[in-house]
Image (cartoon, rainbow, N blue to C red; front, side, top):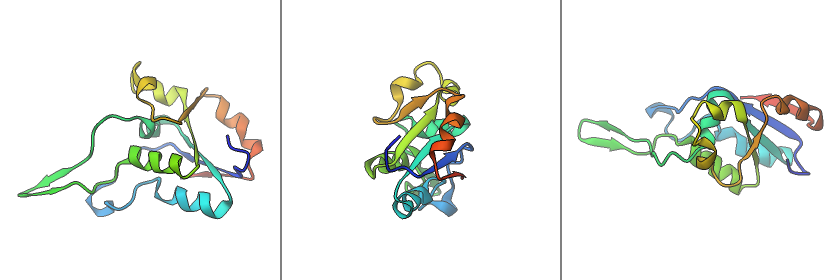
Length: 131
């Protein structure tokens, strides 16, 4: 957790997006919240823990003769947030659902926390947001 972090943003539901939301995903507003709040941390739990994994998969969709390769890629969004200075936490319990090799596939810079450790951090934040 960074010293300047004032807000905690929690994402639990994993939704990869679709053709209609090809420019954004559930993490899209986090960069603005980070910039506007003076700093925030992102916690990924449950199915959204998979956003912190590098699967090597890049989403694309074939429609007739056209391939759409601009679909949301949550792991790329997490990497951009890390580069912007957002602290990214992922709950151990959510990560376990992705198999025993999941910790090896974590994006560099993502911190794993115990399943019951997240609620203990809440008092350190000015605001806690669920996206």
